[in-house]
Amino acid sequence: MTPQEPSSERSRTTPDGPMADPWRSFSYMTSGVLLYGLLGWLADRWLGTTFLVAIGILVGAGLGIYMTFARYNRASPEAPTDKPTT
Image (cartoon, rainbow, N blue to C red; front, top):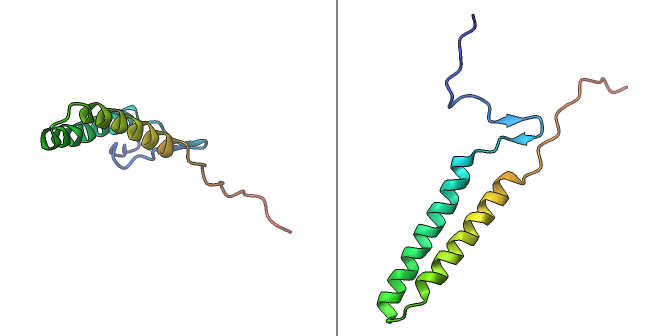
């Protein structure tokens, strides 16, 4: 039997690129909506308006989608080949 590596040290890549982690995508979306929604709500309270919370939520969702797309759309580095160069 071989010793198993802890999950945090396990390689998170495949030959085609990084493995998709649905919890990371979920956290990008949730934190974007919560953070920018909160900022919009605070701006609404400060300025006496009612529409900035909705704009903050939409901007946060958009940034969460962008962060997810940017994270998982990276090109994987080319693997070295074992062919000798002559």
